[in-house]
Length: 192
Ligand SMILES: [Zn+2]
Image (cartoon, rainbow, N blue to C red):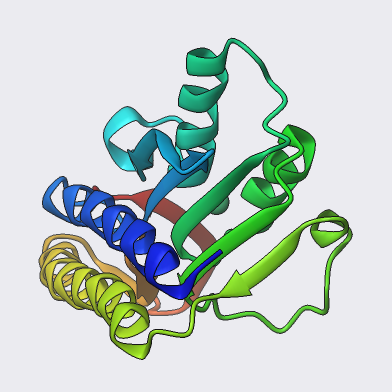
Protein backbone atom coordinates (compact mmCIF):
# COMPACT_ATOMS: atom_id res chain seq x y z
CA UNK A 1 0.00 0.00 0.00
CA UNK A 2 1.18 3.52 -0.77
CA UNK A 3 2.78 5.47 2.03
CA UNK A 4 0.26 8.30 1.81
CA UNK A 5 -2.66 5.92 2.06
CA UNK A 6 -1.08 4.12 5.02
CA UNK A 7 -0.69 7.46 6.79
CA UNK A 8 -4.20 8.58 5.98
CA UNK A 9 -5.64 5.40 7.42
CA UNK A 10 -3.41 5.61 10.48
CA UNK A 11 -4.70 9.14 11.11
CA UNK A 12 -8.24 7.76 11.22
CA UNK A 13 -7.06 5.13 13.71
CA UNK A 14 -5.40 7.85 15.81
CA UNK A 15 -8.72 9.74 15.85
CA UNK A 16 -10.30 6.61 17.28
CA UNK A 17 -7.55 6.47 19.92
CA UNK A 18 -8.43 10.05 20.88
CA UNK A 19 -12.02 8.97 21.51
CA UNK A 20 -10.71 6.31 23.91
CA UNK A 21 -8.55 8.95 25.61
CA UNK A 22 -11.60 11.10 26.28
CA UNK A 23 -13.40 8.11 27.79
CA UNK A 24 -10.47 7.58 30.16
CA UNK A 25 -9.40 4.40 28.44
CA UNK A 26 -5.89 3.44 27.40
CA UNK A 27 -5.97 5.27 24.06
CA UNK A 28 -5.74 2.74 21.27
CA UNK A 29 -7.70 2.99 18.02
CA UNK A 30 -8.11 0.53 15.16
CA UNK A 31 -9.71 0.53 11.74
CA UNK A 32 -10.21 -2.14 9.10
CA UNK A 33 -9.85 -1.39 5.42
CA UNK A 34 -11.09 -3.50 2.55
CA UNK A 35 -10.77 -2.54 -1.12
CA UNK A 36 -9.66 0.94 -0.07
CA UNK A 37 -12.75 1.44 2.01
CA UNK A 38 -12.90 1.79 5.78
CA UNK A 39 -15.33 -0.93 6.84
CA UNK A 40 -14.90 -0.70 10.61
CA UNK A 41 -13.59 1.79 13.17
CA UNK A 42 -13.25 1.27 16.88
CA UNK A 43 -11.25 2.02 20.00
CA UNK A 44 -10.40 0.45 23.31
CA UNK A 45 -13.47 0.25 25.58
CA UNK A 46 -12.37 -2.29 28.15
CA UNK A 47 -12.74 -0.15 31.27
CA UNK A 48 -16.05 1.38 30.27
CA UNK A 49 -17.65 -1.90 29.28
CA UNK A 50 -15.76 -4.06 31.81
CA UNK A 51 -15.42 -6.62 29.05
CA UNK A 52 -11.95 -8.07 28.88
CA UNK A 53 -11.87 -8.52 25.10
CA UNK A 54 -12.99 -4.97 24.26
CA UNK A 55 -9.62 -4.00 22.81
CA UNK A 56 -9.69 -1.70 19.78
CA UNK A 57 -8.57 -4.43 17.38
CA UNK A 58 -11.10 -7.05 18.49
CA UNK A 59 -13.88 -4.49 18.62
CA UNK A 60 -13.07 -3.39 15.04
CA UNK A 61 -12.88 -7.01 13.88
CA UNK A 62 -16.33 -7.76 15.33
CA UNK A 63 -17.75 -4.68 13.57
CA UNK A 64 -16.20 -5.79 10.27
CA UNK A 65 -17.57 -9.34 10.75
CA UNK A 66 -21.05 -7.93 11.25
CA UNK A 67 -20.78 -5.54 8.33
CA UNK A 68 -19.57 -8.20 5.90
CA UNK A 69 -21.65 -10.91 7.52
CA UNK A 70 -18.50 -12.98 7.41
CA UNK A 71 -16.00 -13.96 10.10
CA UNK A 72 -13.27 -14.28 7.45
CA UNK A 73 -11.52 -11.01 6.72
CA UNK A 74 -8.99 -12.38 4.20
CA UNK A 75 -8.63 -9.30 2.09
CA UNK A 76 -8.84 -6.78 4.86
CA UNK A 77 -6.02 -4.77 6.39
CA UNK A 78 -5.95 -3.70 10.01
CA UNK A 79 -4.53 -0.34 11.08
CA UNK A 80 -3.93 0.07 14.78
CA UNK A 81 -2.22 2.77 16.81
CA UNK A 82 -0.42 0.36 19.15
CA UNK A 83 1.19 -2.93 18.25
CA UNK A 84 -1.44 -5.55 19.20
CA UNK A 85 -1.22 -7.65 22.35
CA UNK A 86 -1.12 -11.46 22.11
CA UNK A 87 -4.87 -11.78 22.70
CA UNK A 88 -5.57 -9.52 19.71
CA UNK A 89 -2.88 -11.19 17.62
CA UNK A 90 -4.67 -14.50 18.15
CA UNK A 91 -7.97 -13.02 17.00
CA UNK A 92 -6.26 -11.33 14.04
CA UNK A 93 -4.76 -14.66 12.99
CA UNK A 94 -8.13 -16.38 13.45
CA UNK A 95 -9.87 -13.71 11.35
CA UNK A 96 -7.44 -14.39 8.47
CA UNK A 97 -6.28 -10.79 8.26
CA UNK A 98 -2.83 -10.99 6.70
CA UNK A 99 -1.46 -7.47 7.08
CA UNK A 100 -1.42 -5.22 10.12
CA UNK A 101 0.00 -1.71 10.17
CA UNK A 102 0.74 -0.27 13.60
CA UNK A 103 2.21 2.98 14.95
CA UNK A 104 3.46 2.84 18.55
CA UNK A 105 5.60 -0.06 19.70
CA UNK A 106 4.50 -2.32 22.48
CA UNK A 107 7.09 -2.97 25.19
CA UNK A 108 7.99 -6.56 24.77
CA UNK A 109 10.80 -8.89 25.42
CA UNK A 110 9.27 -12.02 24.03
CA UNK A 111 10.43 -13.34 20.72
CA UNK A 112 8.12 -13.76 17.78
CA UNK A 113 5.15 -15.63 19.13
CA UNK A 114 3.09 -18.40 17.59
CA UNK A 115 0.20 -16.05 16.92
CA UNK A 116 2.32 -13.85 14.63
CA UNK A 117 2.73 -16.60 12.07
CA UNK A 118 1.19 -15.93 8.65
CA UNK A 119 0.46 -12.32 9.56
CA UNK A 120 2.70 -9.47 8.56
CA UNK A 121 3.08 -6.80 11.24
CA UNK A 122 4.46 -3.61 9.74
CA UNK A 123 5.30 -0.52 11.71
CA UNK A 124 4.51 2.61 9.71
CA UNK A 125 7.47 4.82 8.79
CA UNK A 126 6.01 8.20 9.64
CA UNK A 127 7.73 9.22 12.89
CA UNK A 128 5.23 12.01 13.58
CA UNK A 129 2.29 9.63 13.55
CA UNK A 130 4.21 7.09 15.63
CA UNK A 131 4.97 9.69 18.29
CA UNK A 132 1.42 11.02 18.19
CA UNK A 133 0.09 7.54 18.94
CA UNK A 134 2.74 7.04 21.65
CA UNK A 135 2.12 10.42 23.22
CA UNK A 136 -1.60 9.73 23.63
CA UNK A 137 -0.80 6.60 25.61
CA UNK A 138 2.01 8.20 27.64
CA UNK A 139 -0.16 11.20 28.52
CA UNK A 140 -2.99 8.96 29.64
CA UNK A 141 -0.66 6.89 31.83
CA UNK A 142 0.80 10.06 33.33
CA UNK A 143 -2.71 11.29 34.10
CA UNK A 144 -3.72 7.94 35.60
CA UNK A 145 -0.56 7.61 37.64
CA UNK A 146 -1.20 11.00 39.23
CA UNK A 147 -4.74 9.94 40.04
CA UNK A 148 -3.65 6.66 41.56
CA UNK A 149 -0.91 8.23 43.64
CA UNK A 150 -3.61 10.40 45.21
CA UNK A 151 -5.90 7.44 45.78
CA UNK A 152 -3.11 5.37 47.28
CA UNK A 153 -2.14 8.21 49.64
CA UNK A 154 -5.73 8.39 50.78
CA UNK A 155 -5.89 4.69 51.43
CA UNK A 156 -2.61 4.80 53.27
CA UNK A 157 -3.96 7.41 55.63
CA UNK A 158 -7.31 5.78 56.05
CA UNK A 159 -6.17 2.28 56.79
CA UNK A 160 -3.17 0.92 58.49
CA UNK A 161 -1.94 -0.63 55.34
CA UNK A 162 1.16 -0.16 53.42
CA UNK A 163 1.10 0.22 49.70
CA UNK A 164 3.80 -1.91 48.21
CA UNK A 165 3.22 -1.23 44.60
CA UNK A 166 0.84 0.43 42.25
CA UNK A 167 0.41 1.01 38.59
CA UNK A 168 -2.52 2.38 36.65
CA UNK A 169 -5.59 0.35 37.41
CA UNK A 170 -4.17 -1.64 40.28
CA UNK A 171 -3.00 -0.99 43.78
CA UNK A 172 -1.31 -3.73 45.77
CA UNK A 173 -1.71 -3.54 49.51
CA UNK A 174 -0.68 -5.62 52.44
CA UNK A 175 -1.97 -5.49 55.96
CA UNK A 176 0.28 -4.43 58.78
CA UNK A 177 -0.28 -6.37 61.99
CA UNK A 178 -0.08 -4.89 65.46
CA UNK A 179 3.59 -5.61 65.83
CA UNK A 180 4.18 -3.68 62.69
CA UNK A 181 5.08 -6.75 60.70
CA UNK A 182 3.68 -7.84 57.43
CA UNK A 183 0.79 -10.22 57.44
CA UNK A 184 1.82 -11.44 54.04
CA UNK A 185 -1.70 -10.91 52.95
CA UNK A 186 -1.55 -9.26 49.57
CA UNK A 187 -4.64 -7.61 48.35
CA UNK A 188 -5.22 -6.76 44.77
CA UNK A 189 -7.78 -4.08 44.33
CA UNK A 190 -8.91 -2.30 41.29
CA UNK A 191 -9.80 1.34 41.17
CA UNK A 192 -11.16 2.83 38.00
ZN1 LIG B 1 -5.20 -6.31 22.51
